[in-house]
Image (tube, rainbow, N blue to C red; front, side):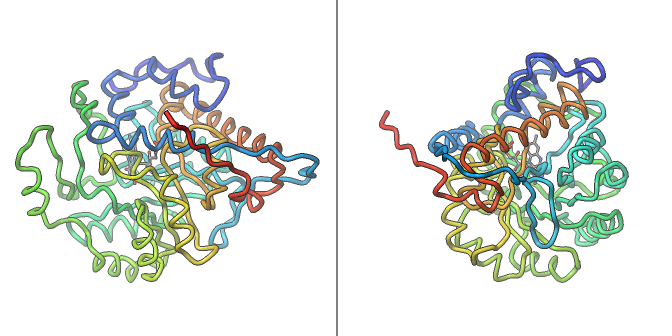
Length: 375
Ligand code: FNR
């Protein structure tokens, strides 16, 4: 029993008044070990906390008398026009949250004109997801141990009309989540990586808490991708290739020079290196280091439309939502995810209207004030 206590079909619990409420309510809708697995990060959750608190250090400047009557949230990135800049991040194993899993999420994305980034580690096959997803669907790729398996994923994604590849490079080692371990989390048998049936086990090294051989094991595995693998990937597909997991401006510049289509500033929602810089804190230096207009997404810690606004103001072209989609899925399936996305978009629209920004292009750093608190 993975998914447990969904709200009756078609019913949004009355407690949900804003997107973030799904986070609060999900505790009651998910099995406790699954909730801990989703909510937690690696190690002691330093980066999970940093991602959230980074947003609290910025405040919005309301502006007066501006005409936003013809305003809208549409953005165009690499020639693709999106109704709004709120994408769904790749999140693995969605059947943990709801029996409908990624199929429900894809339906919600379609219904709300949202760009969906489907995970390699989806618990529903990418072919089934493509059938219900809208036109804006991208595929998140993890390098597989064997190149032929990576190619298999690439070819299937292209075949099924995924419009871009987002290769995630920050999770070559699966660091232990102490919260998940302590809650006794184990992946249920009915929740498996449906895209990888027939592939040998994933190249990630799973670390157990207290394993003294961690360092040796990691260094010896030799399976983490390198710049050579990225160059190979770029030569193997005609789809635009984004890189997810960038935090250092030097990496950002080198990746742009290597020919990637765009970058996702991300620390994997605090599930990679514990103690890593918050993604919002990393964003301004990366924006400044790149050519103006180089496509940038950000994820990590976004829980409200105001958070979306802050990321846009600091230089992201769009954002991706991770955990909130699992929370909304657990509470009310496809309807919950669609409702959560609608709430986020409305919250963003309110911020844009009251800051006098008619379009996303108007959302600039001068809309924000840096708050320095002395505790
Ligand atoms: C993730 N994330 C992730 N990223 C990725 O590239 N491939 C994946 O399969 C997954 N799987 C996954 C599972 C779960 C349960 C979580 C919480 C996260 C990371 C995800 O794409 C995104 O970077 C973060 O979730 C963003 O942070 P927030 O929005 O969760 O704070």
